[in-house]
Image (cartoon, rainbow, N blue to C red; front, side, top):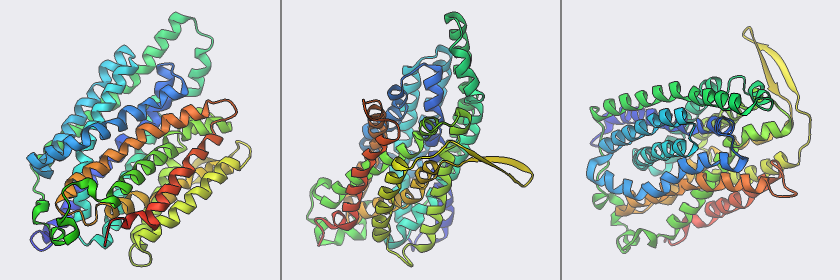
Length: 440
């Protein structure tokens, strides 16, 4: 593949980078939808995290069907189809907003997730396959930069539209009569129509462009060099690769804790004493530290440290940051300074910064786990990729579980983060031993 399509790889990675930008924008938009729909639809904390459940559950349901779709359509047409499906899901936000129907919002999110499952099933192995496997983490890290830049943009743009003056509105709702309150909430729900209409248009346009763009295809796994490996040839099922099965569970837990690290940040900020106007932007700090981590990963892996060792170090650092986020006390203060003529304010509570730094430690996990888990699968690579994409359902299960734990007696929003520790311990096991289970 590298010899026949060498001149096309740069362009191919540019296209995949654009798709990862789309992944990031629409995924991180959920961090703003959670507090927005909690207010507009008058939800409990646990109910609001069903936003993540509906979105990420689609990965579990649709990843295996996506692998069969890709076999029929090829990668390029399959990715184009995924974008059109996402456009349909975004358009469902229009009737959902007009009816202020939380189930209809969840339906739209599930359909968007369905399209993303198709895109992710194609794009991740595509990025991993273009080049040596030892540098796959570097290439996927480059894709991650596109992803996180888009996520930061989503938080500022979408949050600035749908959560504008959210604190004042919350106070006003407590004094309104039922009729006025319903009218006000209806007006709030309709704020989402314009941005999601434009999002739908963007998805459709990129889908059309992708359909008419030439991309080199990844050859069928039956002809891949890895199949010559005796271990791969002897397998009759993708589930006969223990390192893949362990990798799927590791990715499930990683996605769950990463989604917690940014989707719950607004609620964490409010718990610490910050206003909604301040808290709604806290997830951008996670995005910035993710970008820093990706940059260091691109520079250091595999030149100075292997992706496996980097994963192990990241797990240990993540557990330390969780403990510090839970145990550190402070006041919800702000430090104001001037940058390029603009007055900016940043939170001074140390727990905010410890929690934001989880982005840095998390940054290496997806780029390392994915290629390590599909290594040596041969003709089972597409199905193995589909199973790994299914593992994204961790983002559907762990955030609501966190929300439920945080509502238990004797536990609060801050101490509930201890639930992340076992997840990082298992990922550490994968990095130290699980990645080579069943291999010779």
